[in-house]
Amino acid sequence: MTPKRPFEVRIVLVRTIYERNIGATSRAMSNMGVEKLILINPACEITYEAQQTAATGQHGLQNRTTYASWEDFMAKEPESIKIAFTARDGKGRQVRDIEEVLTDVATHAPQFQVSSEEPYVVHLVFGPEDWGLAAEDLEYVNHCACLPTFGANWSLNLAQACLLGMYTLRLKWGGTRTRLDGGKARRAPQGIEGIDPEATLKTWLEEMGFDLTRQRKINVFTVLRRMLLQNTPTKKELVILETVLQQSIRKLREWKELKGRER
Image (cartoon, rainbow, N blue to C red; front, side):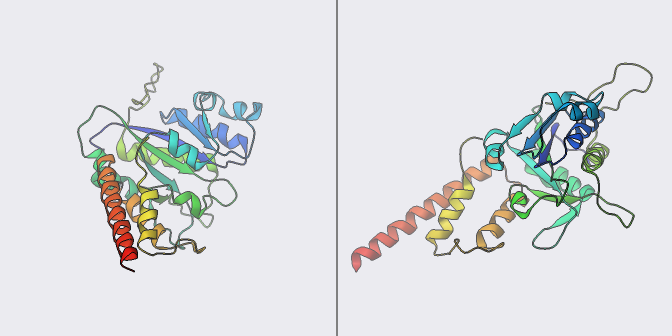
């Protein structure tokens, strides 16, 4: 199903180990009409090897954006739907086939149910080559997706995974196909600061008496946070949530102050 609203795809590589995979990803992006390459805390330097691997697809590599951390990324990237690719399920990970995720987003995400000429950003997120994305990385995304394989080896090369992810998205959501008649290649159109409902949610839970300091992979905050992200709320919905939580926090603090005076 094609979204009702135009979209801009951005590739996010997290803690990439080998620069050749960054170069190969840049080349794959040029095949799929994706121009924005983002690196989060890369574990390699970008040298001639990356340029050589990118070959005729240098645009993403040469115009890449690098962030030191997820916090930096979240502060500077636009509002988006973030789809993380992982081959591991279990341990609280709700992983679905990429086709199912794309159908779900196009059908139900409120960002794509409105008529707008402004493209909405979709980040496709890929982890490092050794162990992939960690649980801490997935706290920042809306959906977890896997790429189907049909052999005993389910592990994909990073650049191959990026190519397959973008290709599947193009098949599901569309784009302008490249002409193979020798003519000029056509490209698909490409293209908050403000509230912090997650911090407010944590404050609200603490005011409610929940202990969030204990080191557990899953607690009430992570569960509620994941539920919030997976429903891909709009900015307006986040503003309403922030307002409700702030009002609740004020009432709780007023009640605690009153009880303290009565003692």
